[in-house]
Length: 183
Image 1 (cartoon, helix red, strand yellow):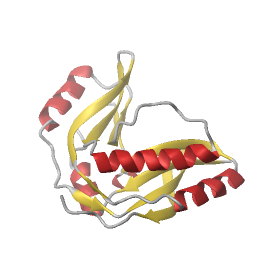
Image 2 (image 1 turned 30 degrees about the horizontal axis):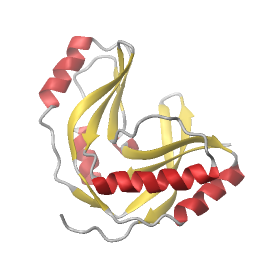
Image 3 (image 1 turned 120 degrees about the vertical axis):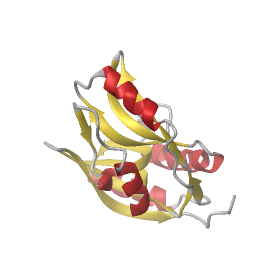
Image 4 (image 1 turned 180 degrees about the vertical axis):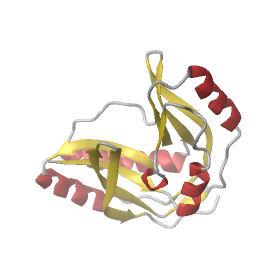
């Protein structure tokens, strides 16, 4: 079995700017910059032969390149407990189109899906026991955060390996997009 997801990998300059946001919240486990990505479709654990079929399906995806705009910060919660912090990604029509194409390709191979609404983001930290007021202070202080939009020329199939320090990701395959049309 292999645990997979499809994502957009980020340029080093973008990772560096996002990493500069880390800190100031006791109880936060900040992700390493090399773990930053924008998940397009979480697949989960599949047998190796299914992974090969997913790879073939993703090779057939044709979509125009996208321009990503990252800005603002937010949090995800379950009930009243905030469990993670993220940088937001604008929901542009080209990004939504790419997401739909990838989702359609993957679900033809393995129909099970996690059913979550697509919320493009870059996870920055996981929270355990963080003080709500410190989280609110972080969100308020970083609300104006915004990066220059940048072109995306490919998407990636990653495997995820869970360990004591969190997940580590390995790029299994990359898939090119058509040239980005300037805005």
